[in-house]
Image 1: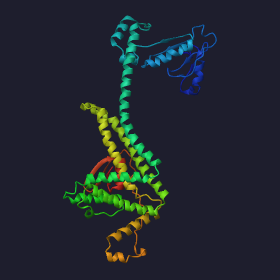
Image 2 (image 1 turned 180 degrees about the horizontal axis):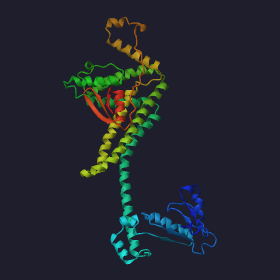
Image 3 (image 1 turned 135 degrees about the horizontal axis):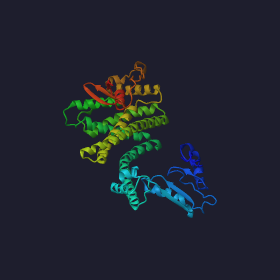
Image 4 (image 1 turned 30 degrees about the vertical axis):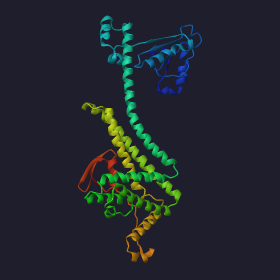
Length: 416
């Protein structure tokens, strides 16, 4: 329209973002017409050109009212900065979203009957309706921000715990302490889930516990060794064997290299599981609102589910640490040496006294060849649903959760 009437003007849009400050600064020159959004040029001082102040100063013409009174006041304040002359005027239609959705419909009907099409409407009812609509929108926005903050606080507390562990791993001189603390927690947790106490007659519980331990740590432990022990004695026995194996590792590995390996295993467990946890929490946040249809507070439901998710996150971190700490070494030769020494100690502990008096030569012990065979898996998206099975047990879940079970715990991919 301005181009048709041959009025020189500047348009501040995405094409001219580099010259935004320059264009806005020249808006106070005589005869200058600048078209911009209500957010453009904030922080840039508009200086009036020669003779502009005497003509009335800068004139700001708004084509609509913003849903926030603060934005309108900022725009209105551009016309009279630092005592300069200026004026402002806003145009609004009863069909604008602000008026149509939030303003008083009665006022709109009265004005429609009173004024004709195309006639400017200037009436106190309009101003009151706009202010009432803006207050309504601001109240809704405040409630949304407050609710979002409450959701963010839940995840932020979890973030503080994980980042605290992560920072301790980076800064500590003895990451081994963190490793053994997490292993101890996982052993205690597994004993509590597999074993119901020394008075139990169910030998299968102890067998399951021994099977889980030997699948994570290269140690030999039998149900007979744990028979008759309570939870604390059982945990102490298991940690004693793990500690003895780790001393063998300390003799083989370089101390500084071993610290790097410990940090690497810890950081990998933290980062991988935290990334998956963030994805799960985002999915939970999107879906928990539907629980309001069941007369449940979505925030309370979110907190409850988030606690369960966080417990599972910590369990996955500890499990990955137990799986990876003895499967990582500085070299294949170092790993073979650790296994050889561990096998030698095991053979010595189970041999008869006569056999221990005449130990076999090292050359007589044949070690199995260690081969690193990567698991072959089809190309499946992380969020695709798959079915996995182990014996008679079957589970259906996303592939990102099923992958570690297939790789580390003997589950097979059944359907995808």
